[in-house]
Length: 177
Length: 370
Image (cartoon, rainbow over all chains, first blue to last red; front, side):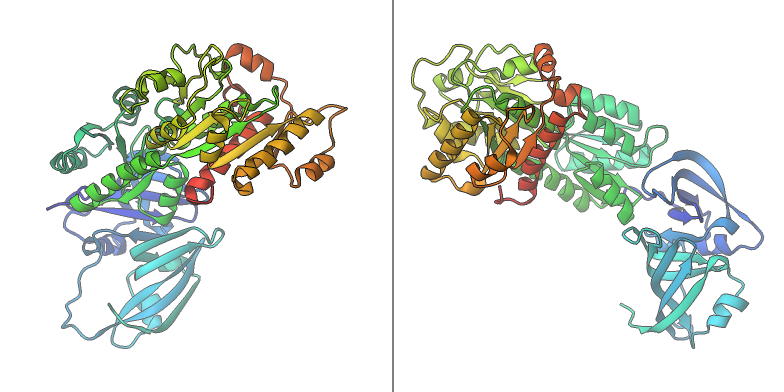
């Protein structure tokens, strides 16, 4: 049974820029969010049911729009809590051995902790430099606001825009539950 | 049947929530528009509002603010149901005085459990109402003014009744511009039943309910054993029971003191008032009322010739809980029947009433500490 709050084929996402929080629905049309974000042929993302807040007061809704366009190059991170199967393509368990590692990263305004999965040996150079995908998926993540540490955002999945990453540190392997 | 108003711009969700709640036996009213939601809340007075935060035009925070700012519906329970499910959103919703918060998507069980929890929490709150008694055995201390304004300050936090327990022509009706026709004494004569309570209550536009005093001074001796039963019935229905006490301990004053969770002795900075307060404290302690339940409030602290605070503290053996400066607008407030907390919400008396109300609210958060 579909649960109230989930429309088929749409995904609720919290996008952050350096100045704003944008809560919106994305119509995915059969794709997953990772593919849409990392599609190098498009610089913009169409979104629906858009609610805008300033980062300094992230719960207060400043304005709302039926539809809008987001510039990918201004998105610092995208947070997904419900329906991560619509956000990230599942990797076949048979394909190599996936291991999760603790990760800490900073982007403008936030410090993020979570886990990141690698197939085989973790390779930060590949992840941050040679990888063609701009948005890095961090699982079970928590993003603390640097200027207001009492305020945080959590995400089953947070995509970090590597163009905004200031510091990125990999910790030890973590058990996957 | 319990009536629930659901306000959400997502029509698909509205239908699903309606089906879930109807299946659980609730009567459901829906609207997709915030402005219409506020109107429906005012007209239909539902037992619970389920509210989405993310709506175009008027968002959920604005709807919640409108409900909390409307004295007639300010105590209506509101359950926020939203896709904005971050900790900051939850904190913001609770800070805006939502009763609870639920993130979308929601299952049938989650929704019905949470709805029942909010409803029963409100009922429990009513069943365990806290009793605050304002007592000023020396006349002219402004006891009624403090009781009225404190009761009004509490209305937003839950169903509140103000019992004018005067036995010598109470004045609470004057403060609230209400003209009582029946009194608590009539209720007692009528058999003091739960079913007949409504007939003796008067509604103030703020949502405050008044249980008026007899207009004629009481010539008979009321039975003080009725006090406990009266308070049981009021506490069952109201989260806060504020009593403007009589000006003597007998016949019912002492019984009220024994049942109050907080007892505010109101005095002025003059020697007669101080003597009465000190002696009242001794009498109450001799009657077995714990000192920690008794709080002294100094009202109308102004002017030359008044006692200095140090000598008052020495005589009382403790510092007053609160000192309320004289508010020159009080006479006009009484003449107009508009208490200062409504007409001058930023004035010193309103601030004092909020502090006294805060004392009561903290007792709700920490049961047993009142």
